[in-house]
Length: 146
Image (cartoon, rainbow, N blue to C red; front, side, top):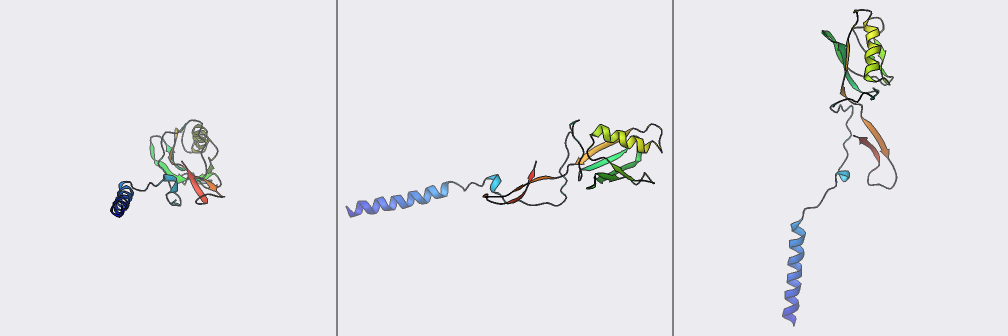
Protein backbone atom coordinates (compact mmCIF):
# COMPACT_ATOMS: atom_id res chain seq x y z
CA UNK A 1 0.00 0.00 0.00
CA UNK A 2 2.80 2.35 0.91
CA UNK A 3 4.54 1.69 -2.44
CA UNK A 4 1.36 2.55 -4.32
CA UNK A 5 0.99 5.95 -2.61
CA UNK A 6 4.68 6.77 -3.32
CA UNK A 7 4.10 5.98 -7.01
CA UNK A 8 0.93 8.08 -7.14
CA UNK A 9 2.68 10.97 -5.40
CA UNK A 10 5.71 10.72 -7.72
CA UNK A 11 3.50 10.53 -10.79
CA UNK A 12 1.48 13.54 -9.62
CA UNK A 13 4.61 15.65 -9.04
CA UNK A 14 6.02 14.73 -12.47
CA UNK A 15 2.68 15.47 -14.15
CA UNK A 16 2.51 18.91 -12.52
CA UNK A 17 6.09 19.68 -13.60
CA UNK A 18 5.46 18.65 -17.23
CA UNK A 19 2.15 20.51 -17.47
CA UNK A 20 3.74 23.64 -16.02
CA UNK A 21 6.53 23.52 -18.62
CA UNK A 22 4.33 22.77 -21.61
CA UNK A 23 2.68 26.18 -21.97
CA UNK A 24 4.23 29.62 -21.99
CA UNK A 25 2.59 32.33 -19.94
CA UNK A 26 0.27 34.47 -22.04
CA UNK A 27 0.74 38.21 -22.11
CA UNK A 28 -2.23 40.18 -23.26
CA UNK A 29 -1.36 43.14 -25.47
CA UNK A 30 -3.46 45.33 -23.22
CA UNK A 31 -1.35 44.30 -20.22
CA UNK A 32 1.96 45.20 -21.83
CA UNK A 33 3.64 48.34 -20.48
CA UNK A 34 2.67 51.58 -22.20
CA UNK A 35 5.50 53.66 -23.58
CA UNK A 36 4.70 57.33 -23.85
CA UNK A 37 6.33 58.91 -26.88
CA UNK A 38 6.59 62.66 -27.03
CA UNK A 39 5.71 64.18 -30.42
CA UNK A 40 5.23 60.84 -32.11
CA UNK A 41 4.54 61.11 -35.82
CA UNK A 42 2.68 58.03 -36.96
CA UNK A 43 2.78 57.41 -40.65
CA UNK A 44 -0.12 58.92 -42.50
CA UNK A 45 -2.19 56.78 -44.79
CA UNK A 46 -5.00 57.79 -47.11
CA UNK A 47 -6.96 60.81 -45.87
CA UNK A 48 -10.76 60.91 -45.92
CA UNK A 49 -12.25 64.01 -47.51
CA UNK A 50 -14.15 64.70 -44.28
CA UNK A 51 -10.97 64.71 -42.16
CA UNK A 52 -10.34 68.06 -40.50
CA UNK A 53 -6.79 69.12 -39.80
CA UNK A 54 -5.91 69.38 -36.11
CA UNK A 55 -3.27 71.01 -34.00
CA UNK A 56 -0.10 68.87 -33.90
CA UNK A 57 -0.77 67.22 -37.30
CA UNK A 58 2.40 67.15 -39.42
CA UNK A 59 1.81 68.52 -42.94
CA UNK A 60 3.67 69.22 -46.18
CA UNK A 61 2.47 72.37 -47.93
CA UNK A 62 3.51 73.99 -51.20
CA UNK A 63 2.59 74.98 -54.72
CA UNK A 64 2.50 72.26 -57.36
CA UNK A 65 5.34 72.68 -59.92
CA UNK A 66 7.14 75.12 -57.58
CA UNK A 67 9.46 72.86 -55.52
CA UNK A 68 11.05 75.79 -53.65
CA UNK A 69 7.74 76.58 -51.96
CA UNK A 70 7.28 73.23 -50.20
CA UNK A 71 7.72 73.11 -46.42
CA UNK A 72 7.02 70.44 -43.83
CA UNK A 73 5.54 71.79 -40.63
CA UNK A 74 3.68 70.70 -37.52
CA UNK A 75 0.43 72.64 -37.00
CA UNK A 76 0.82 74.81 -33.90
CA UNK A 77 -1.43 74.36 -30.87
CA UNK A 78 -3.28 77.56 -31.84
CA UNK A 79 -4.16 75.96 -35.21
CA UNK A 80 -1.73 77.96 -37.33
CA UNK A 81 1.13 76.82 -39.50
CA UNK A 82 4.19 78.94 -40.27
CA UNK A 83 5.00 79.31 -43.96
CA UNK A 84 8.18 81.39 -44.26
CA UNK A 85 7.56 82.03 -47.95
CA UNK A 86 4.65 84.31 -46.97
CA UNK A 87 6.78 87.21 -45.78
CA UNK A 88 4.40 89.71 -44.16
CA UNK A 89 2.12 87.38 -42.25
CA UNK A 90 3.57 83.88 -42.39
CA UNK A 91 1.08 82.27 -39.97
CA UNK A 92 -1.97 80.71 -41.61
CA UNK A 93 -4.78 79.10 -39.58
CA UNK A 94 -5.64 75.72 -41.08
CA UNK A 95 -6.68 73.60 -38.08
CA UNK A 96 -10.37 72.75 -38.26
CA UNK A 97 -10.39 72.86 -42.06
CA UNK A 98 -10.74 69.94 -44.45
CA UNK A 99 -7.92 69.37 -46.93
CA UNK A 100 -9.87 71.14 -49.68
CA UNK A 101 -10.68 74.10 -47.44
CA UNK A 102 -7.04 74.37 -46.34
CA UNK A 103 -5.88 74.32 -49.96
CA UNK A 104 -8.32 77.14 -50.75
CA UNK A 105 -7.22 79.25 -47.76
CA UNK A 106 -3.56 78.77 -48.66
CA UNK A 107 -4.23 79.50 -52.36
CA UNK A 108 -5.61 82.91 -51.35
CA UNK A 109 -2.44 83.65 -49.40
CA UNK A 110 -0.13 82.36 -52.15
CA UNK A 111 -2.19 84.30 -54.72
CA UNK A 112 -0.31 87.46 -53.73
CA UNK A 113 2.87 85.95 -55.18
CA UNK A 114 1.55 83.56 -57.86
CA UNK A 115 -1.17 83.76 -60.48
CA UNK A 116 -3.73 80.96 -59.79
CA UNK A 117 -1.53 78.81 -57.52
CA UNK A 118 -2.40 75.11 -57.21
CA UNK A 119 -1.69 74.35 -53.57
CA UNK A 120 -0.83 70.90 -52.29
CA UNK A 121 -1.48 69.92 -48.67
CA UNK A 122 -0.35 66.46 -47.58
CA UNK A 123 -0.61 64.94 -44.14
CA UNK A 124 2.70 63.37 -43.17
CA UNK A 125 1.63 62.41 -39.65
CA UNK A 126 -1.43 62.68 -37.46
CA UNK A 127 -1.54 64.30 -34.05
CA UNK A 128 -1.45 61.74 -31.29
CA UNK A 129 -4.88 61.27 -29.74
CA UNK A 130 -5.19 60.02 -26.17
CA UNK A 131 -7.80 59.20 -23.61
CA UNK A 132 -7.13 59.12 -19.89
CA UNK A 133 -8.01 56.01 -17.90
CA UNK A 134 -8.76 56.32 -14.20
CA UNK A 135 -10.35 54.06 -11.62
CA UNK A 136 -10.01 50.39 -10.76
CA UNK A 137 -7.85 49.31 -13.68
CA UNK A 138 -4.40 47.80 -13.99
CA UNK A 139 -2.74 51.05 -14.98
CA UNK A 140 -4.21 54.52 -14.98
CA UNK A 141 -3.07 57.34 -17.23
CA UNK A 142 -2.99 58.30 -20.90
CA UNK A 143 -3.70 55.66 -23.55
CA UNK A 144 -3.22 56.40 -27.27
CA UNK A 145 -6.17 56.00 -29.62
CA UNK A 146 -5.16 54.45 -32.96
